[in-house]
Amino acid sequence: MKKASAVALLFATLIIFWLLLNGSFAADIVIVGIVTAAVIAFLFRDGLAVFSEFKGTPRALLTALLYIPYFLKELVKSNLHIARVVLTPSLPLNPAIVKVRTRLKSRMGRLILANSITLTPGTLTVELDGEWLYIHWVTAEALDIDAATASIVAGFEKYLEVMYG
Amino acid sequence: MTISGIIGGILMLCGAAFLLLAGIGLVRMPDLFNRIQAGTKATTLGTLLTLAGAACLRPEWTLKLLLIGLFILLTNPISSQVLARAAHRTGTPKTAGTVDRLADDREERP
Image (cartoon, rainbow over the protein chains, first blue to last red):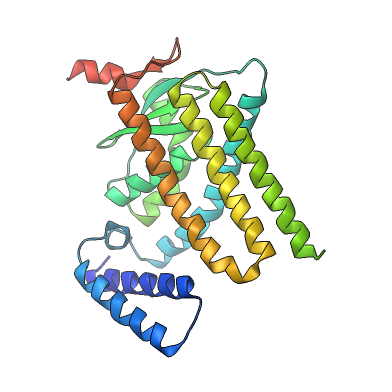
């Protein structure tokens, strides 16, 4: 994504946050918000990976929108999964720390991937090391790299690859 | 009692139920990593549902509650991940039988 549009996107996000927090469109509040957001966007013009690494194509935006319901679905599934484990009297655990590999190159893509993995069924990112992620899995189904990658990473990666690459 | 009031109440009740499950999980799970798992997931969804319930009961708060939910979604998994990493680096004991690829790799290239 080009620098100018990244700065514009940062500015727009800051303004929206400011207006949401204030809950008012009075002239003085809007003016203070615009000035502050412009200064911050200028100061961080090449610092924020969230925006500068986002691809910004229409397809990336659409994927970002589709990612939200997919993520929420996984979050609910993860909670029901943990609830079932916790409430079963025998506590059916099979914990393991598995190693998986991601195709994502950007820092931001990897961050969102690691966060999403932490919030989804039975998996918790323990360590990141370049393209390798080490994941604690409550009910491990596969121990080798390829099978674990297909099971944990592939679903999110499909979306994040379009958004961040 | 309005419709939105009833929906809000149900959402908050579900949120409280998930928070309760998180508590039960913390007590029942055998080691630190499994406890973090129970804690992170159930508290995230529990808090989000509680916030959604509050938004139904007090529609004028919706935007602020949305922001709180966003910050929780961003920060909760990061704190869990950092806790788990710190625990692993300091050698917190794991349940017997846990396969640990990370420890294997650490031994190979210290």
